[in-house]
Image (cartoon, rainbow, N blue to C red; front, side, top):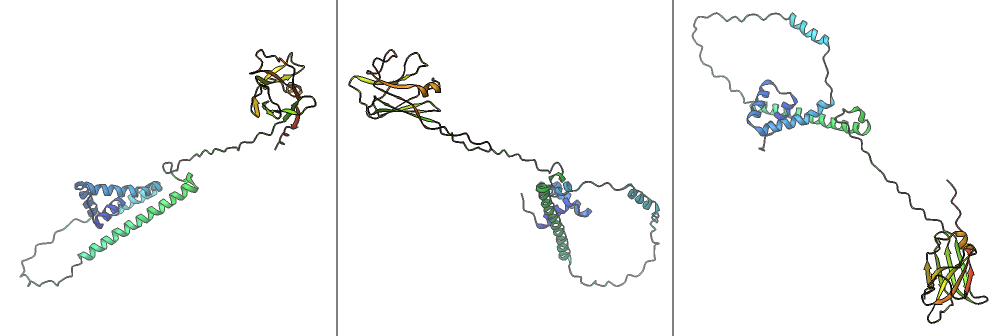
Length: 293
């Protein structure tokens, strides 16, 4: 786009504003017809100033105003016909007198027009800024007063509230000391009341070569002892095989350890008398339920 002077820019702005006289409007329209870039600049001003039209609704003049205009037109006197002056006898021409030298004021007039244009543009720019500020304020505090096209769209924000996980209350814990009658503890059996998982800790027992210790559950509610698996050679052996038994059976049963062949009983029955036995006792009671809020 070519560079334009301040006069051209002011002319484009005033043309969009509608404050030019007929000659100046004709000048702008001629420039628009031959200069596409100038036409684009005028359209840009029309777009900027068009915001003011959206802020003000159309106003229809009252019917009485049109009646007064028609009445004033009817009362106007007809224009007198134009009469040409009669021909006068030829006179001796007066001597030619040189007119006094008049200072050239074209620059003053041009600067005055330019100043007037820029004052108009500045006034319009101030009005646009004030209108924009008013639109922003209305959009923030009273959006219902704005036209539908300028009303901000409601924004919906989804907030996810995460509830912190609540730790499960501690469950009841049961312990059985497995020992021979009158002897020192050989194993300590611990059972979790909630999960029914158990852990066997070796304390003082030592298996014979080629033999394995096997743990059994003995209850008068069961037809025969139930194997809970071979106790491993490490210090701790954990199992999760009590989940299929009722809590009452688990808590009241007798737990026994037999000495079986390496790898445990093959048919699911003990093949020796129990060498260590014991019963569960509650060491940690279950936590009381939290009071309702």
